[in-house]
Length: 345
Image (cartoon, rainbow, N blue to C red; front, side, top):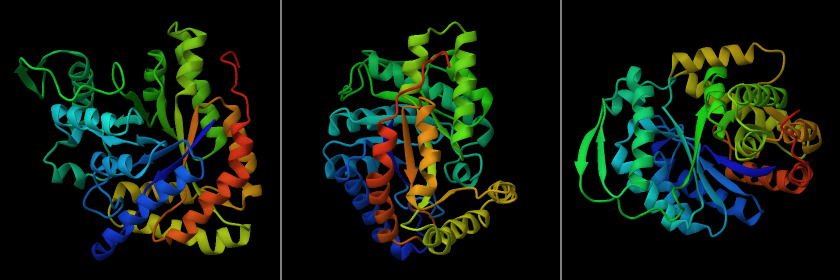
């Protein structure tokens, strides 16, 4: 299983934005130095939940600041973009990174509706816009002219998109899935996905849903194995040398993140209340030994990669950097040696 870091750096104070953005760059560089496979970027606007705000712009900076590590989006809030503009941006990034992109696409958050208001987008149109944009992206990257007639965009340009993608025929595209229905829909097409799962059993359940839906749609075993091996799951881990430090020092940063975001969104507040009502913590928390079994179990599902968010809330950069190093020293060697599960399991 491949491993990556999920950069989701919060900045509550506008005067600290520059510092937090710099710290995000350094965490990406640290991930590469420690041997991680990928760095994933989030996207949120106006609220400080994601300090670097614009993942394509930030990805360009990371492409110049790193040499080997893959750079992924988890995810682009696709419905907020003009399709030709984002096709150009991604193609340029593909060239700058020399083919290191993992392009995760999603319709956009249904929790932070202020993001749609700011971009003058009707949230009820987000899914339709998303579907139309994805078709346009593929056409832009593979056709010699820019022609499209749809519900939201219409254009006829007798010229091709430039630059052409570095990766042929185009950068890797993954869809984010947030429900069983969307997961099954992607499985029926044999497509890799990005998923979030709070627990390893939850990820295993998602993989079972994927395999069943894909088989019922006639997708072959090899294709199923390939799609799952190219899929990623995201986790949040409060990791420290001891369980006590993780709970007493690290966990409060996660709780502060929950409180901060809940104050901005009633939908997120409801999600937090539901998660915190469960008997277990809504996040992995502890020393490496305490979360080893969870990650090993996750690897046995056959999922291709896991991206871990080590920094939450106002957590200092030093705390999350130490967590990343601990993970790579203690946990990563175990899960990278785990064989993939067969498609028939």
